[in-house]
Image (cartoon, rainbow, N blue to C red):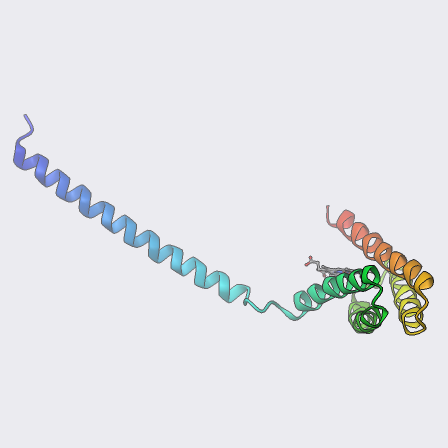
Length: 145
Ligand code: HEC
């Protein structure tokens, strides 16, 4: 027979065990979170920052085109040129080189057209630029798989 004393003891022991497990798991969680932040600082690595800026420059270009604000398009295209120069280092194979060239060609045309307020040419260049992002990235993704 289990006595009442034993039941109370059992309850106390399991309560204490639960508390220990709870404390341990919060410590573990905290430790993991800190380790995660150490590995991936919130502000991101240089490359990551650069690439996010590349996407946001593309958004600025599209937004500027849609609103007919070619000054904004020109500024974003200037930024894009700078980001393009930085990815050049990665691109050693012929295929990447080809897409890299269409990227740079499109950015150059876009800058010139925006400066000259030539909406039609700017539109074509923006589409080519966007196409070059997709071509190069789809190619890279296929390599990874
Ligand atoms: C000629 C090839 C090429 C073109 C064109 C290109 N990129 Fe990239 N992109 C790269 C490379 C290389 C990386 C770095 C990949 C890596 O090492 O993780 C990269 C990384 C990125 C990333 C980060 C991806 C990630 O995994 O976090 C984004 C976002 C990005 N590019 C957006 C763009 C946009 C937007 C455009 C067009 C305006 C563009 N790219 C055009 C080659 C290209």
